[in-house]
Amino acid sequence: MDSSDNSGANVVSPMAFLGRTFDEALALTREARDYLRDYGEEESRELAVEIAAHYSVETMRLTSRLTNMMAWLLVQRAVHQGELTREEVRQDTWRLGGGDVCFNEGELDLELLPPYLCDLLRRSERLYHRIARLDNMVAAEAV
Image (cartoon, rainbow, N blue to C red; front, side, top):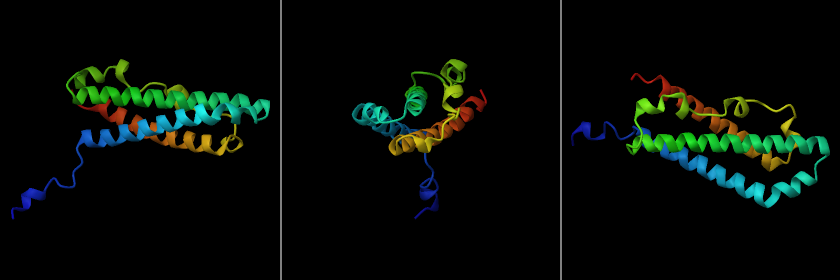
């Protein structure tokens, strides 16, 4: 058997990597939607007024992260499908948005918020940071 047959066996294509990242972001988006729809309002009513205000801010931050990540991933999918060029997506218009909100940490200790929301916030923040690194890599590619 020719050893060159397996030379790329462990190499993950960019599209496969982005596909898995897209699936992860979509699953997290659906999970957050279900949580907010099914439990969010009820849990926010059980919080003290000052914490409830932070709850609202953090759910908006969660929504912003998820929306910006999904938009960026859809743009990358469009590149791989030939609908946009790599040159086009290097423009600021197509870059990952929401950094001011999405990277900012709230003033409140997250542990004061419902545990499931804390978990969603932490996972969305980790994923947003990963995608931000990818965005920087795409922007830095030589034209």
